[in-house]
Image 1 (cartoon, helix red, strand yellow):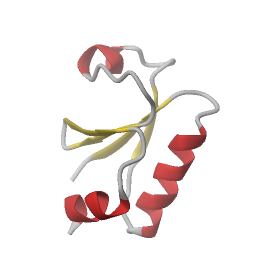
Image 2 (cartoon, helix red, strand yellow):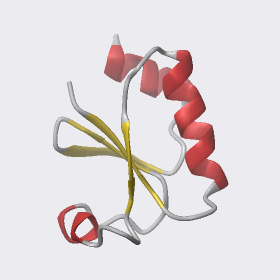
Image 3 (cartoon, one colour):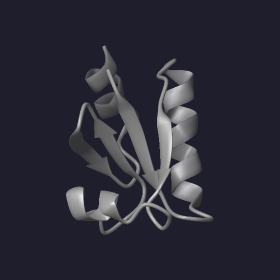
Image 4 (cartoon, one colour):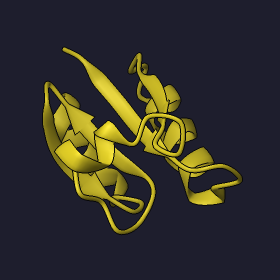
Length: 73
């Protein structure tokens, strides 16, 4: 499973999502969309963070913990 967190500089919500993933034991890559704008073309997020799982944008913003747990259970 490939998990990516789409972030922007200074995004406090992104840090919250990263902590949630760490608590679930999920390994992920952090992608700064200001450095890699091609990700915005592929995943048009209007709010950071974006959570991409196996090439599919699953969440934007901070998901509910129960919804996140369902994706990884």
